[in-house]
Length: 488
Image (cartoon, rainbow, N blue to C red; front, side, top):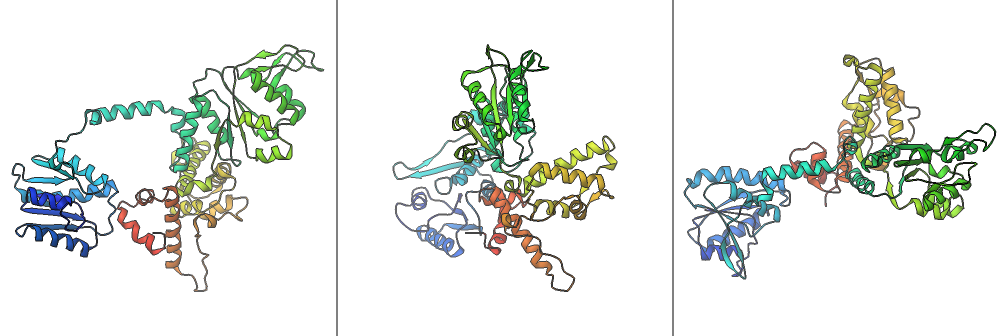
């Protein structure tokens, strides 16, 4: 007996199916097909034309993606559960045809052939004709070895990156870049809106770098200009009235990482000195004549457009190119998708509960499903800082254990312009009490919104989008996409 995937139904003499039937012959052919039923019927007719006594049984699957491993595995398992009892477990009675089909289909058949008793595997080619194949999982892919590889791979990822909450591919790519940059002693420039987590990533780059010194941070926009120079470079006694011998932040970061937050706020005269530090790897304290060598890795961050500032003459071009060796662009929270927003909100809720109620877990607040939906539809122009503040205020002021949408609204300082209408193309329609509200339309718009967000997070891959949406069967997503004009 034989299991086949969908084939070209043509009767060409050189076709693989024709060659197998002619050279070996089979009593029964089991055909798995995702082609339209009329095409499958042509294939069955061709099979019976070649061998009049052959029996053909079809497993027809509509709207089935043959590149989706999970679906291929599922349908193959279902077919085998039906076929195996009919074979009577006769030795060599069952043969898998591994030539046609996608790589995923062939992979599943090969795996099945190894694990099932008394199963043969067959392939064809123009050059070599029909061949039985001896196939087994290579030693380096055994369960034990794969587990060792996974453990080794996991060990290479520092703990400091593992606690970052995300699910979007955008963040996955960014964190891979950050880890790669961390391993080299080069400047890193973090770009992004306020509240996107630039300082958090900077600190994790330091921890992953294995540098032995401290992580020292300075916000260039938070220190008065007349104090910033002494803060960065240090002073010697007598440099000015009241000055004492004091290390600057550069010296404090010796052997470690110096994080210059809001680097775009650094005055031009100090930009010159910073450029000198980067070039010479030396600092001179205020009032001193002899520079001191330092070993410091620079990480800088800004929410400003430094290239535009270079054009305007407010930021030195030579310093910009010294800093912008490795660049990480932090995505705003709204661009990371609904899943990341909800994950971030849940993390904020946990922190707020721990801060306010400590170990009294019975008093911890929880989100209702409507709150999760409401939060995911907001723009959060202030990113994590705004989200954290809103949730903390809501937990502090809400009277009930379950937070409501109104609790979140009340905690917002400004609810204007915060809808994600431009992101997902859909927002919750306004409820009215005049009888014009349509519940079905509202639910459709919500469903479309989430499907669009999931497809964006998944890079257009339907199977991944279904997983993000909590839809177990990929096939259930396809008709919904067609309904809203989201499929090709």
